[in-house]
Length: 430
Length: 181
Image (cartoon, rainbow over all chains, first blue to last red; front, side, top):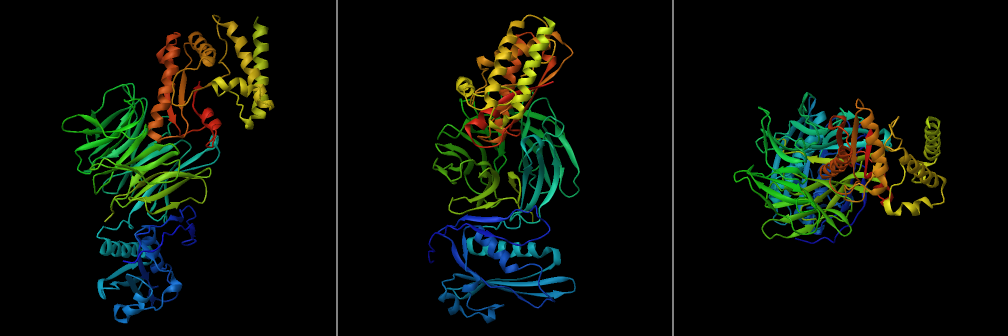
């Protein structure tokens, strides 16, 4: 595999201009030196008129964002095959492309028929070939599906390009701020506002089936935890105890919600059975216990506690009822999140120059700082474990950042206006 | 005496109006933010900061009224905290005493103690820190004889900054407990 020099590009990809001005745009801030060169040829079209979406470009952007691929620029594509029969592998070896994606689109009534193929250039073989038929408003989804297939065929890791993100926006001066809760595609497109308020909104959390969001809203003047159904916007207030009602986290089976409640004096971790509304208290001390997260197997919970004097991460074993401290590097480690795929925990770690996203390998015990930004908050891990989305600051503006789990690639998702914060990466939707 | 009180209130109100009119330099109508450095701030050249200090003196005089019924809600309704601390700074004790007096003499009055922190660190943890500060004020007032039923606590953590920005000055103004009657 050819190594491409590290690319440090601040490239504003104006993906498309649409009516949905609330969408987030993408700025790639750091490319990985391990990225695999891939050529994605613009898809041939037999459809009437111009296609409303450039499918090859969407696939290109998806794969580039992942940090694992380095798509060739369009100007360096030396041929434009639209099927594997038209491919001359020698051409693509000449431009050092390890892989090649080709495709074509035709119209069938109101639907579009998209055929795509993935080739291994050096092995001279077709790795994938598939046909997808979608409606006009699903062309972007189809492109993300293609990205998922290509990503998995090459890396062996399930793609997460068809997932969504939830996030909170804040606009206006400090004394007249408007808050919004949004859901968008993982690339920032197709954003939808699902709640607005004059009072703060925070800590959105996806149910494991991707159908609901739990979040904290101060809309009554007090914090409460709500659960909102995304399909019909119906919602219920799950808790409104005196004091803090915060940090909701779904159990992997979707039946329970862990949270932090201060009704008994100071923030403690509780688990609520969603159907019965029974509560079980897991912690009991005079410290702040908050920011729970379930292990993928559902057997333990991670949480932040300052019982040692400053915030550190603890792991609570549900069967033994014991909590064990697991972070010892530095004097500020909080908001831990399990990787869904390996024994790794992501967190916010304070170093001498600020607050960074860091990861701890549970086997080697090593803590690695992943970001260079200084005001990081709220890490949330992609369902395939390959990327972490987080909130940070750019100038005086809150933006979302994404960093690969190895820290080698990163990009930003700034909003056109106002602050963006509190990202939550959805589970797989299909 | 009553006229005297009225006069003092008027002076404070005027000082407040003056400060509010030029508060962008950092003085707020709630007085000094930064404990030990407060004197230095008071010597600052801008009118806003100078007025802020003058107002502080007005309240110092107000302490002379302790032990008597506090007729109206004290004007200073925000007190500030040091980084990562929930201890009441000595210069705000007079403010708390005035609120305690008001609440004792008005058993029907209720106050929401709103705890806030600066933006550093994670949001949910900061909710906990904001609550700790509000509870620290609540405990102080309870010791002064204020009934628990008159006080309620809401923590906003870093969600409702008084001032935007990443400066130490902004942080100092955001680490606060606000009395909301």
